[in-house]
Length: 333
Image (tube, rainbow, N blue to C red; front, side):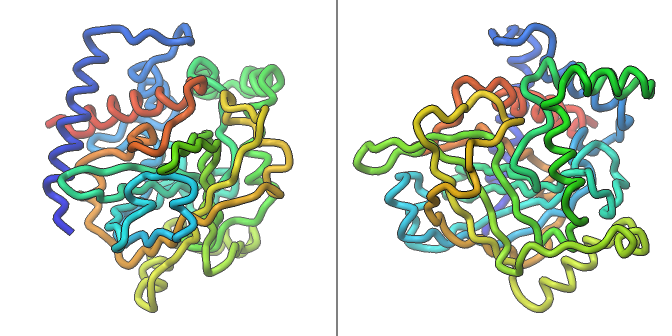
């Protein structure tokens, strides 16, 4: 796969977005937070690490392909879900937060998988999913308040924040109720935002993404996790890839009338029992040079015809703005 044009395209797009943000305030439904303030707050918690991402700092770039399932066309006309040939993918597995040395044994730290789908002619579309079905905050202002409170290191203030914002505890509660994932390859990953798909006949359908590992959802005990090297996922994944591709079934969880689309800290009612559509099989085949992933950023708002993001979820567009600020800083000389 030719990657240089894609990298160049995304670098220009990021630079353009950062420049626009610095000149014209964006109209928004939140009062305080913007991309700049959120990255500053992340740096206050985790430190500013030159040349590295502000969030999901500890990670590994990978490559592979995506083969759509015929059923996907019933849901959406998006080109990567209707391709007759495998779609090239550049991806990145990561640990949440901004610590470049985040331990893989940390149970309450979300894992991430971010993907660029190569659509050809220097075009891509992205998917960003995590190892919990919910995000940790409802809106950008709540995120800013969370980060600035944690940065105080004042246990009383932090406890009071979570008491006043119980929805901000949902993600950690989910993660702490489950074993430490044994591998990046053996975790369910969810898209926490709601999307709307449109098929070739114009039918629209609300949905959420989920990636299910074909190797199974496998965890290890807390004691076993503590005995491992803090960076044990990387050699484990390299060894696993030496034996064959790491594969995930990508599905769409179908929405129903009345489902909320504005709060990524909440799941839909009976979400695990919903009807699903199989979108295809993602195969991760090898490590990729981290410079390939670092030369651009994975933007969840980078969608294509046939997929629309949520219009009333204020975290969704803010992620793109914050990632662009982070990219601008790490790409600076």
